[in-house]
Length: 560
Image (cartoon, rainbow, N blue to C red; front, side):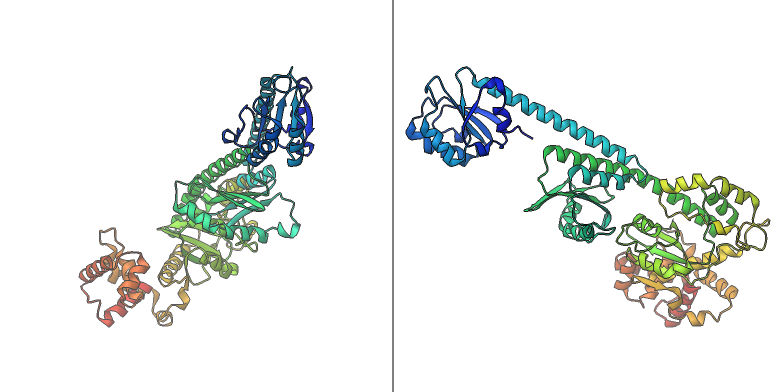
């Protein structure tokens, strides 16, 4: 902040005397301008201390001269005596006092350049102090970023540094975390404070501009009582800060530093989440392949276990699977997580996010997932821990020895890992038996996953397999014979060496009752592409897809 006129007049060696306008001594002096012009205002910007000897000024010039300086926003007028005037003309004193402009008498022995140097030194000192404060603030922000909850700690610290509020927003603009250091009443700073949601909603147009214009690095807004800055955080979201005071250049530096730290922290977290997702995907592959022991041991090495109760399988088609994973782990935006839910096992699988949701909370988890995209839901009751033998001591020992390390690993990556369940080892038949887990698990899980994927075709945004038309008839068929029938009739499509998924294309076509546009929209392809695929399906199967009997037979095969 620039030094005030009061501070400058208090410099003893300058011997300055205030003659008028003492009420204005608190104004900042941004520079010193020396001019003997009758009208120096065209060469001023405002905020200057103007110094003159009055060489071309007379008593009659006092009022217009002072009026022009006031209109230009000059901080004060220094009148040098001992050259053109032995004393400051009374007319200038009266005009300055009437206009509220500080008037200072500069003695003959005080050169104007001495005043200029003094102001320059003060400005340099103020700038150094501001830079030092900015460096100190950046250090505090950096230390906050190194904490376990880095982004949250940075947002909290930033709000205190600027004496305002700060919001961390996800890519959709929803509030992930909010901090308020403005001193507003507690009812406006609650855990999921209304002010945070309202502010986030008011910023949606600005967020849309940032999202649609990648070249924009930030946006600044100003209202009579608040100043706001919004910045993108790479592809991981946005953050906004607000203050009742305008942001100084140093405050902008602190805000930019916080933005860099948040971007770095979120991108690093993204790498960890990506690695964790690959591990979970591998665990799901092991489960589907019947390698229950290997899957259990992989999770046990991280201090985690499969759910110890029956689950429902969800197939989720979400634009942002990472955001959905965070929400299901309880680490998502506070506005979405209204109560603590048991952690789910989530894993990427063939372009979808597969969720193993405990049956006791399946409905709540489905509702959460539906906010992020389309959801297909299997029949409930898939047992994740079945065995007739005793729990394998080696796996239990490994779980115990890695419990602490696993908790740290879970904290470093997304919390959507399967949570440790102490009751797992005590559950009858809940561990790895001497002869391996029950091989029925892979078949049950595979069927449930297939059910969820088939339900997803009709999801808008949620579809449950148990509610699909024709399920009652299918339940009357012999499972083994029906599965053999389905495998045989669909084999040409599954063996077709093309990147196009003819099975899913056929499923969407039949689910849409042969309507090309609706089916193409479900698949996200052009209707001509779908027409080509259906022609290829007809050729491979040797069947007429316009025949209702053929359609019914194929639909039954797809539903098995």
